Amino acid sequence: MGGVLVAWLRDAMLGLHHDITIPSGSALNTDLSRALTDFHTCRYGSLALRLPRLIHAGHARTAMAARLARSYLLATRMLIKLDEQQLDWMAADRAHQSAETTGDALLIAEAARQLAVLARKANWHEQAMSIALTAADHSGLRAGGPDHAAERGLLIQSAAYTAAKAGDAAGMRELTDEAAAIAKELGGTTRLRDHGGCFSPTTVRLHLISAENSAGDPSTALAAARAVTPQSLPSVERRARYYTGIAVAYGRWGCRDDCVRALLAAEHHAPEETHARPTAKSLISGLLISGRITTELRRLAARVGVLT
Image (cartoon, rainbow, N blue to C red; front, side):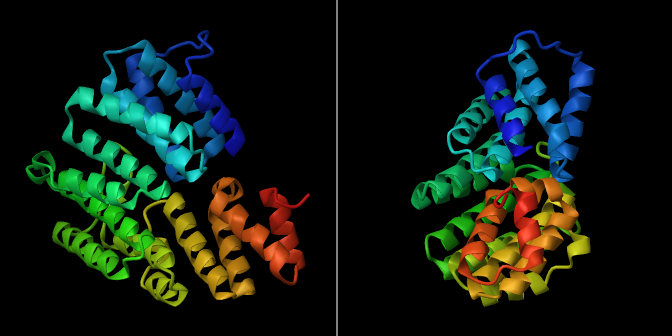
C-alpha cells in the first residue's frame, strides 16, 4: 500500500490526472480531517485516496492556501516515513511556500519543522538545528496560546533529535528537558490543528526513545521506553512508533527474540504502518541474515514483503 500511496502522491504533485472531480470546500475540509485521522490510525489505503485528491484540489483552487499547506504537510510526513527522499523535499518546499502565503504562525512553524527533519535526514545537522531553533524562537509562536507553545515544544524536540544524530547526547538531553518543561507547564495534552497531532509529557518521553537510540545507547533507549505506558499514547501511529523504537533498541543490543516480539506488537497495532515502514523492513532483513530464523520471524518477513 505504501507504493500506491507514493505513486498517487507523485502524480498529484506533478499535476497529472486532471479529470479528478473537485468536491466543494466543505467536503474538502471533511476530507482533510479524515485524511489526518487516516494518518494517525495508520489506514494508508484510505489515505492514498484522500490525500492526492486534496493536493490536486488545492492547486485548482488557489484561494485555499491554508488547506493546501496542511495537505502538503501531511504528505511530507508520510513521505518522510516511507523514506521517499525526492518527493519529500518537494512536498516540504511546497508546504513551506503555501504556509508563508497564509501568514499563519503555526503553519509556518510546522513547515519549518518538516524542513528541519529533512535536513537532519540529509546529515545537515547544523542547518537542521538552526531551522528548528530559529522557528521555535519566532515571536509569532512566543506570543500565541497553548497550541503555539506546543508547537515550540515540537520544534525543540526536533532539535534534540538532531543533537543525538550529531553525536551530542548531552545536548540532546538538555533540549529534551526544555521540551519536557514546556509540556509540564501546559499540563495534559495539547492538540495541534495543522497536523492533527499533539504535544504532552508522554509524547516527549516517546520522542526520547528514538533520540536515545540515535545517540547510540540501546539500554538508555529501553529505559526511556519503560517510562511510557503504550495505552497512554494518543494514536495508533504513536503506539506503532513506540514498539518500533523498542525493536530498534533490542536489535542494536542483539536481543533477537525481543526485537521480533516488539515488531509483532507494532504490527498488531498498525499492520499497514509496519508493513510499509523502511525501518521495520531493515530490521527484519538484518535479522534474516544475522542468525536463527524462527517460524515467527519467517512469517513476519513474508507479511512485510522482505521474504517471499
